[in-house]
Amino acid sequence: MGNTKKPWSGRFQKKTAASVEKFTASIHFDKRLYPFDIEGSIAHAIMLAKQNIITKKEALKIISTLKKIGKDLEAGKMKFDMADEDIHMAIERELTKRIGAIGGKIHSGRSRNDQVVLDTRLYLRSEIKMLVDLLRGLQGTLIKLAKKEIRTIMPGYTHMQKAQPVLLSHYLLAFLEMFERDVQRLNDCEKRVNICPLGSAALAGTSLPIDRGQTSRTLNFASLSRNSMDAVADRDFIAEFVFDASLIMMHLSRFCEDLILWSTEEFSFIEISDAYTTGSSIMPQKKNPDVAELIRGKTARVYGSLMTIMTLLKGLPMTYNRDLQEDKEPLFEAVDTVKNCLTVFTEMIVNTKFNAENMYLAAKGGFSAATDIAEYLVKKGIPFRAAHEIVGKIVAYCLENNKELEYLSVKEYQKFDKNIGKDIHNVVKIENVVNSRKHAGGTATKQVIDRLNEFEKIIDNH
Ligand code: ARG
Picture (cartoon, protein in one colour):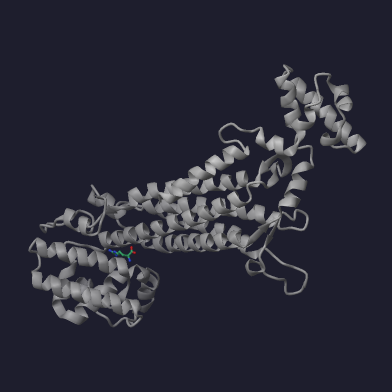
C-alpha cells in the first residue's frame, strides 16, 4: 500500500500518509460500479476517436483492454489495492499497466467528478429496472392470491378496532395500489437519473472538441445534462431514489405488521409456512414471524440512508466536494435492502395460508353491520345523525342482553324505530354488507374483480 504512483502526484512532494490513504479510499465499496465504469470509458474512448482526440488504433486498444479488464474483474482475477483510492483510478491504473502510456489518454476531456456521477447514474438506472420488476412480481403474486381468495371476508379495522367487513381481496388491492404508486415513482425518478453528465469534466467542461451527444447515445441516455456545474454537484436523483425506496419499505413494513398480528394465536387469520418462520431457542412451542419482523426492522436502515443523503447535501458549496463520496454507501444500502426485502416478502406471501373461516367469524362479530343499519334508516328519510343515535341504542341493547344484530327479531328492532322492516335481516348479513359497497373504490365483489382485472392488464403491459 502507498507505493503506487498516483495519477495526480505531479504537484506533490510527499507521499500520502498511510492513514490518509485508508481514510480517503472508497475502492472497498465503489468497486461494485466497475461494469458501469468500464461501459462509460468505452463510450468515452469511441467518442475521443471519432473526434480525432485519440487515434482509432489507440481507441481500439483501449477498448479491447477495458473489456478484458471487465472480464477479469468478473472472474475475480483482479485484486484491488487501497492505494487505488477508487474504482475509476483502479481501472485506469490497470489499463496503463497493460498497454502503457496510451492508457493515460482515456482521461482526456474527463474528470473523476463527471465520471463518478456517470457511473452512479448508469448503476441506478439498471437497479431501478430490477426494482420495478420485483414490484411487478409482487403485484402479480397479490393478484393471484386476491383472485383465489375472492370469497374471503375479513374485518376491516380503524384504530385497531373492528370497523366494517371487507373482502380480503380488497385489503390486498390496497397494497396493490401502494406498490403501483411505488412503480410510478421509480419510473418518474428514472427520468431524472437517465441523463448523461459526461463532458462536464471537473466542473466547467473541457476545451477539447468533444461530442457529448455521441457518448450519450452510445450509453443510451435519454438526454444530456445542461449545466456542467450542476452536473457534477447534483445528487438530487439519489435523494429522490432513496425517498422512493423508503416509501417501498414503509409499505412493506405496514403489510408485515398486519401479517405479524394476523399470525398470532389471538387472531389466527394466517399461517406463515415453517420455511419462512423461525423458532425460539428456549420455548419449543414457538414459531416466530421473524422474516416479517426483519423487513419491518430493515425499514429503519433505508430511512437512515435517506437522512444521510439529505444531511450530506445540506449547505454543500458548489460544486464537487469530497463529501459526495459518502453518497454511495447509503445508496447501495438502500438498493440492497429494498431488493432483498421485496424478494423474501414475495416468497413469504406465496407460502402463507389464509384462514378464511376465522376471518369470516371475526368479521361477523363486533357489530360491524351497525353503519349499514344507520344507512338503511337514512334511505327511509331519517337524518344520519338521528339514525346513528338509534343504532347506538340498538348496539347497547345487544351488549346488555348478549345478542347479535343478525339475531334480533324484527319486533326487537321496531322497539327502536318503527321504520325498520323485515328486510333488516338482509341488510345486516355480512355478505350483503360487503356487496352493497358497489361504488368505484368500494369493497363489493364486482368492484374488486374489476380492479383486479385492470391491474392484470397493467402488469401484462409491463
Ligand atoms: N471517489 C470519488 C467519489 O466517490 C470520485 C471523485 C473524486 N474526485 C476528486 N476530485 N477527488 O466521489
